[in-house]
View 1 (cartoon, rainbow, N blue to C red):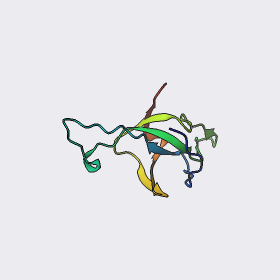
View 2 (cartoon, helix red, strand yellow):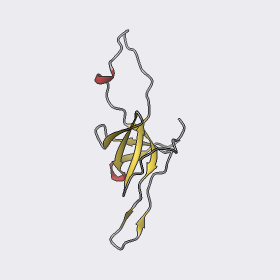
View 3 (cartoon, helix red, strand yellow):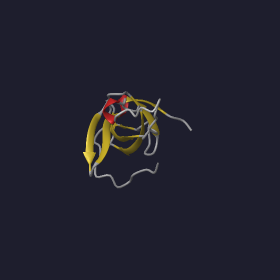
Length: 102
């Protein structure tokens, strides 16, 4: 999946804009599960980083993730937004559970 660089959303503070990674649709026993009944994927790709946050001394704190990283998020974390028909999620960096290596 290629990294989107022309997104019309610039997250603020320690927020991160992510997009769910599409999973291959699996058909089990000839039954197709409708989208409404599927669980939300926990794997996502970082699309854009916010402006950052500052510590108690006023120093900028670097993000632990970078644009293009594959990350794990909680199933129901973040705020869903749609821009130009594309669904994204805004999460705080603290809500990211981990970075997928490899």
